[in-house]
Image (cartoon, rainbow, N blue to C red):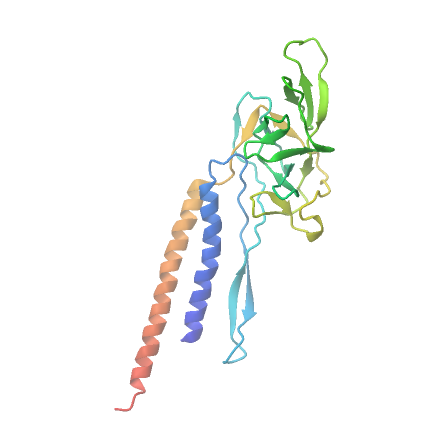
Length: 253
């Protein structure tokens, strides 16, 4: 009976981790550029302690690998709103100074003249942070090159600001950091830049990409996990009842 109870308990603990990911996805259905995660992996480990050597329990390893499937695109008309094509990601500076990546493209010019997104994360260019001269209008080309022009002098040529740090992640697995940004799965590229893939990194200007979470599918998963949780708890209670009944039958009258 103990094996039955521990197996059910392991299933409850594993479902809790997956349920946390689904709950996080539901909470970010309306977040610009949010990407859901792929399913976690299941492995078996030996349980140490008193008992037979055949006692193994399944355990869940959470590897929050990002699913870069594109989300719905909405036209905004703002030249600083961008949506990344295919598996393109944008480099930003994390709060701890490391390099993180995101699909969030609601860019703006801060009060200090640097470019950031609506979450307040500093947007990086190929040569570092991007600065816009005061009072200039910003336009962004499909390859991420940014230009500034004066609204009072429309005939004057545009001034080159820099180029966004765009990377193709089609051949690089990205995981979610604690701050919500992405970083490569490989340890050598954690918190730093990584080599771009074979595809050309590109963007669309004047549009924003929404979340790629399917709310209906996520709600169905939550219902399945709820039913599974109730079934596992019922199994644990049934194992306890059977164990107590067996102990009663072995008592001496």
